[in-house]
Amino acid sequence: MSAALRCAGLGHRYGRRLWGLRDCDLDVPAGRVVALVGPNGSGKTTLMSMAAGLLPVTEGTVEAAGGAPARRLDRIGFVAQDAPLWPRLRVADVLEVGRCMNRGFDTVMAAERIGRLGIRPRARISALSGGERAQVALTLVLAKRPELFLLDEPMANLDPLARREFLGSMFEACQETGATVLYSSHAVAELERVCDYLIVLRAGRVRLAGDIDELRSRHRVIRGPDGWPAGGGWQVISQRSMAGQTTALVRCDDACLPGPGLQDAAPAFDELVLGYLDGDAARLPEEAAA
Amino acid sequence: MFRVDAGSDVPIYRQLVQQVRRDVMLGRLQPGDQLPSVKDVVDALSVNPNTVVKAFSELEHQGMIVRRQGVGTFVAAAPPLASLAVAPRLLSPLARWVERARQDGLDAEQIRMLLEVALDEPAAGEPAAAEDDRRAAGGAA
Picture 1 (cartoon, rainbow over the protein chains, first blue to last red):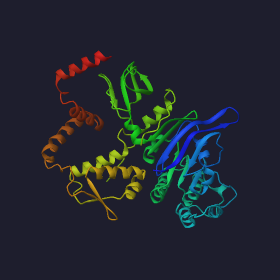
Picture 2 (tube, helix red, strand yellow):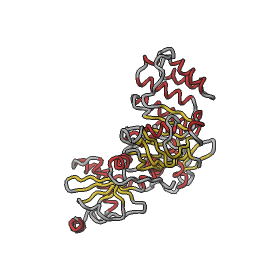
Picture 3 (spheres, rainbow over the protein chains, first blue to last red):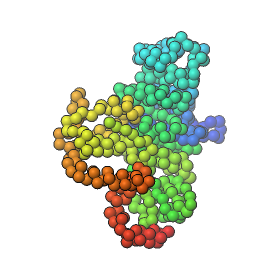
Picture 4 (cartoon, rainbow over the protein chains, first blue to last red):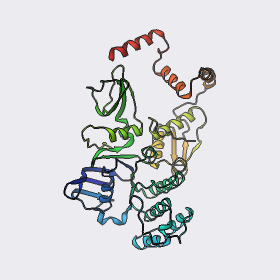
């Protein structure tokens, strides 16, 4: 299957010394909804901006929607954090700009969606609430019908009903056109429903990447008396001790058999993500075989 | 017909698979019954369509359901899980047992845990086995 986003040794350096992202190798299959997770400053926005062709590549390569981002702009739909739009324009003008700048822009769908959301086409962007502005930006990008959506915290300003509505529109786009979505968020609990592929960034490096179900099947959460994680055929990703008991997220690619006195369970989605955000193990560039 | 428990240690696609299997086993879904479309499930649950497709593919692979192009998805004529004909005989003592457990102050999670213990460790109720377990745990500490 073709890759929707492919990075090899990708890096961007801000100024002379600060690497926003480095040694990034990714191969995201088309049609996936990808959760991009990481603490603030871990490189999420840097990665999205390079994939959108907005930030120069310092080293390595990036291909988005089948080619160099700068040559694929009409197939990439990017919504930056906080959905920046021209504040002085009216909603209808913003949609008109979208129509003029994008071949195949779905004007009917855009107008219909704005109407359904109860946003007045005559309203100026500056007069909209944060949630409404986000909805206008998302409408703009949905109407563009891209192959690759790059959404930087798209739901941060949306209330729960608006979130459900937005997810419905996004999933519809995925089903109709087979689009790929790269989706960054801090709301880890929400991502399990939304995404089927996971990328965890930390300190500008890829810590984990792959199909979520596959990654979950390769990890276990093991609990036992303090000291147990030493040895064993597993790689400890992160561990915590409490009241003489140590609980750890471990990676074991083959079936692992915890010894007597150890309890083991499959990791919940958030245990997997938080384990990698939290852990202090060395950098693990991983790509599930799938 | 579907619900999703996000945050569970069971992946969402597997939850959907288990719910169909359970409903077939309990006779709530009969051979030939139509399942909702992927789109309906996506809309109702706000879950990723790939997850729903994966659940349906797994059910199809198991022979639980058949997909007819352009018509829909149906419970197979002869799913590999027979519906539980003996259910009432087994169910009513179990229901009484659950009632007793509730009267003893156990909540749903604790009751489920007891059931799992009984399933996974058939000897768990025997006093001697409990002693063995304690010794084994002590030895590992």
